[in-house]
Every structure is written in structure tokens, then in C-alpha cells.
Image (tube, rainbow, N blue to C red; front, side, top):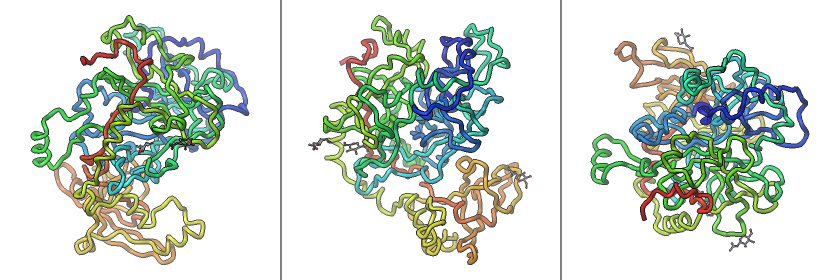
Amino acid sequence: MKGNPGGRNASRLGYRRSLMLLSFVATIGLGCDFYLAESAIPHGGLGVFTAKPLEKGAPAQPWPDICVYLTDANSRKGTEIDTHTWQKYRFGAQWLGGRTDPRAACMGLVTTFNSMGMKMYASARPAADPFLIHTNGGLDRSKDPGAGAITQYYGATSETTRNLDAGEELMLRDTGHGGDQYNLDSAKEDGRQHLNIETVPPPKRAPEWLQKHGMCLDNLIVKTATDPSMGRGAFVKRFLSKGTVVAPAPLQMYPKRSKFSVPMSNNDRHEFERKHKMKYETEQLFVNYCFQPKGSTLLLYPYGAGVGLINHSSNKSKINVILKWSDHHMNHSPQWLDSTLSLDQFWKMQYPGSLILDFVATRNIREGEEIFMDYGPEWEKAWNDHVQKWEPDIIATKNYAYPWDEMKNHGITKNDGSNEEGKQQHKSLKPFRTLGEQETSPYPNNLMTVCDTRNWSDDRDDRMKWRPSLHWSENLAECRVLSRTYNSKEETYTYEVNVWPDKCSTGGRHRTCIDYDVPHNAIRFVDKPFQSDQHLANAFRHPIGFPDHLTPHFWRNERS
Ligand SMILES: *[C@@H]1O[C@H](CO)[C@@H](O)[C@H](O)[C@H]1NC(C)=O
Ligand SMILES: *[C@@H]1O[C@H](CO)[C@@H](O)[C@H](O)[C@H]1NC(C)=O
Ligand SMILES: CC(=O)N[C@H]1CO[C@H](CO)[C@@H](O)[C@@H]1O
């Protein structure tokens, strides 16, 4: 989602208020590093602010966002999913299977940054962590019932594009990647003719103001859960007293869960899949990250930082957060939960981020504790049934290798080679196989190789010396290794690769495009389309339960 899903926000927070807040104050000692608060841009909806100065090129968030890919997004009328999602190449998902372009629904910071087309104040750009993207959170399809039930796209992040003072709002300079734009025309339609974007002051708020009115965005740390079979989990970064908002979760809402399922009979689907060598996800992975209120077709997608990684515990004494409607955040609109409303009226006013859920500590939580919530009895029953019935899919498991396991086998790890362990890995560096070698020694069926390449547009030479791209995740190209050279001084390999083997062409004329001097670590494995865990036919799908007492009456639109 390029930008703030709340970008269509109406004008509740006035322009005057943001002018008042332009004081320069040193960083505050206590408090959080990042805050969610009303944007300092007029009509900007929600915004993210840094409470401490950041240097140019520094990470603009404490840890990455997770992204959930919808593999059949555009065909889903009534989901409006494509207006609030990122395009597939943004975070390296070019080869994720999809009958239509997959789109990423992300949750976290870069997802919430404003991108209102205000170039002069842009301060951050999206990035992707090469060591986190395409990882399976420790779940293995040969033994874990949870395989395919969590996303493999953790690692969507961002970095600053200039030096930032404490209190500045993080703004993307981002156009043309789908998502909201700061649209003066629509602002005018909304009766905001007075707005002159050229005179908007730099978006900034005083750190004291943030501490008082903002919502802390970095109480959590995301890491692999204490029980590795549980995938990733959310842990607490600092002591939090009972009643503290552990994490805020602005919501995007979708009218019908059924829109995220295959709209055809099983027979038709199997026929389609056979004929086109494509696969549907019977129900989209996305639903696992949504709440569904009882008696309602609605799905509520919380896009707050880290909240999608808060796991369920069946042990009630482990549960340390509950959900509440936000009671102090300005952007939250409690009047829209009023029981006198109709669902029609509600949808007319609804925009992403207009409702905010808080995850609230039910007791004091120590630094380092894992956060657990109650997903509700239906979810727990569905999960237990799934675990009981579950067996590994023998066919999908045979001759399958996780891309990251294979990359580690090839010595590509986060280690920079500066310590002993790193050197060891270099000595045992396993080369990527050439096409010739693969004839006798093929890779597992699911794997393909892709390369970072600077130049994959039409206007490239047939043979080019490799140079790194500016944004590796966007400039990955399918590639096949033609030959390699061992450089004994550097103790590493360089390769000659064929990029876009089937797609490199100019004016309809097919060409063979080659990059040479490609370094070992510019190559990576990815799953071929339709091969990743989220396409497993036996993967668990179930929305998270939503507390009855938070459900307004008019959401219960399902006849029983
Ligand atoms: C539930 O969790 C508590 C606190 O972590 C622990 O002491 C207890 O042994 C757990 N009970 C079960 C049945 O696992
Ligand atoms: C791509 O290659 C062409 C031809 O060599 C060159 O003119 C152009 O600058 C390159 N583009 C990039 C982004 O490097
Ligand atoms: C997706 C995921 O990892 N779910 C885990 C959440 O917690 C339950 C039990 O507490 C595990 O069984 C699941 O694997």
C-alpha cells in the first residue's frame, strides 16, 4: 500500500493545529522511538513520526513489516484490495504464484507512512531486507501443520532519504506504485478548496506532543517464537504496566469474507488448474490475519506494526493482551460504532484507519516476554481439528527445498565474513550450478534462480558488465547461470548469466541478454510460481475471532 491508507481522511484535524506544533525540541529521554499520530499534513489521516533524529540512510523503522500476498487480488470485486496494497515487485514477490498480479497487504510502519505526493518533504523510501524476505519462519511443510498458514514475506522495511530531526513525520516520495495519492482534485470535491499544498509547512510535531498524544509503535520486537513450531512471534521490548496500549491497530475493513475464496466449484477449479498449470488458493492466506466478528461476513484487517504476529494461547494464564476500541486516539471514530447506524451508512463513511483497535496489557509485562492473545473458541477448535487431521502433502513435499535453506547451503548468510564463522563459510562456498551441470544434477523442482541486475529494461546492451541495482527487490530478474569463474584471491565465484531468458526482447525481437561478472551474492533462489507454502492445498485457513462485546449490532449481517 503505497502510503497511508487513511489518506482519504476528512478534515477533522485542522491546519492550525499543525502550525502550532512546529517547535524545535531536543529528543526526550524516556518514551518511544516511533509514534503513530494524526498526520501533520492537513487531511493526512494517520502518520508515523520519529521521536529521535535519524541520519540519512538509517532504517526508518525499528523492525520490518510483514506482508501478506493476495495471489488473486484484482479479480475480487468488493474487496477493494488493490487500492491499499503494494505491487508484487516492491518486496521481491515477482514469482509468487497468482492468476492475476499478486498484491501485498502489509502491516507496520512503512505501510502507514504518508505518501501524499509532497516531494519536497519526502523523507523515506521502501526497502526490503534480503535476509528476511522469502523465509518461512521456521515452519516446514514436511512436519508442521502451520506451514502455509503464515506469510513468507517478512522484511518489508524503509530507510531515510535525508537527515531527520526529532519529531519529523516519515513521508514517502512515492508515485506510480499503486495506492493513495494526495489528490488535490478529490480534496476539492470534499470541500477543501482552501487547501494550498504549496504552503503546507514541513510535517513535524514536538517530541513532547508525540509522547503525550501519539501511540507508541515500538513496544514490540518481532522474532521467532520461543516455540519454533509457532513461527514468528511478538515480544515486548520494554517493561509495560497493566493497562498500557502494547500496540495500536488501525483497521481496514472488507464487506465479505467469501470474496477471498475461489468463486467456482471444485471440479471447475481442478479443470482450470490442470489446463493452465496454475493454482488457486482455495481461500486466501490474508483471512488468517483478519478478525471476523461472529454472525458477520465482515473481515477486519489490523495493519498496526507487529500485531499480525501476536499468537494465540490456549493457556489462559499466558494471555497478556486483550482488544479494546481505542479510547484516546484522535483518528478513531467511535460514532461509527453507534448501534443506530445501518451497515450501508457505515460503509459510506468508512475509510482505512478510521477505526483503531488497541492491544492492551491485562497485567504488567516484563521486558522480553512474548505477547499472547485469545483468538477465540472457534479459532481454537478449527486449529485443533486441523492439527489432528493434518498430514504432510507427500507430493508437494517430495523433491521440495526451501529457497533459504538452499541459499544457506550456498554460503549466502547475513554474516559479512568478518569473523571466524564467516571465513569458514567462504572456504566451503558452494557454487551455483551452470545450466550444463543442472542437466545431470538438477535443483529441486520448486527452485529457480533470480539475479539482482541494474539494467533490465529494453534499452540495455545484449552483454553488460553487472552492476548492483538501486533497489534489489524491485530489480530481480529470472536468470540462468551459463558459466562461472573462481576468484581465488577473493575466495568467491563470479558468473555469466542469461537474464530474462524468455522475455528479453526489443520490438518483438527476441534477444539473449547476458550479465557478466555477476557476484555470487547477487544470485538467489526463489520458489517457482504456485510452489510456495501458501499454495499448499492443506494449509490452515481461519480468521481470528473478534470479541462479541466490541461488535456493533449492525455488523451482524449473516442470517443464522
Ligand atoms: C500455563 O501457563 C502458565 C504460565 O506460563 C504455566 O505456569 C502453566 O504451567 C501453563 N499450564 C499449562 C497447562 O501448560
Ligand atoms: C541500461 O543500459 C543502457 C545501455 O547500455 C544504458 O544507456 C543505461 O544507462 C542503463 N540503465 C541503467 C539504469 O543502468
Ligand atoms: C501460525 C502459528 O504459528 N500459530 C501457532 C500459534 O500458537 C498455537 C498454539 O498456542 C500453535 O499451535 C500455532 O502453531
